Amino acid sequence: PNAAVSAEGHADERGSREYNLALGERRGNSVRQLLLAEGAATKQLQVVSYGEEKPVTLGHDESTWQQNRRVEIVYTSRK
Image (cartoon, rainbow, N blue to C red; front, side, top):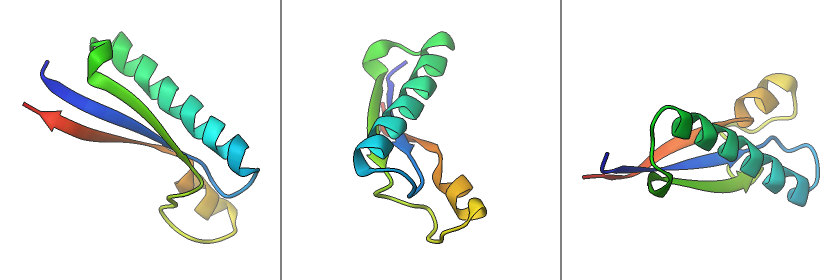
């Protein structure tokens, strides 16, 4: 109950910067909603969107794009 997490949304390189930031935020919010449904408190969750700015891997093919479409859950506090 004292933990806090950040749901960091990411996107692949396709689309405009603005589109990818919005997409990353939608992905992060989806994970946030799931965590809330599982019992997390609103104050424990933060959503951040990086869009295409922090790729896991570089490349220009479907397998690369698939890896870059994600949400990472990062613990920001574990009291």
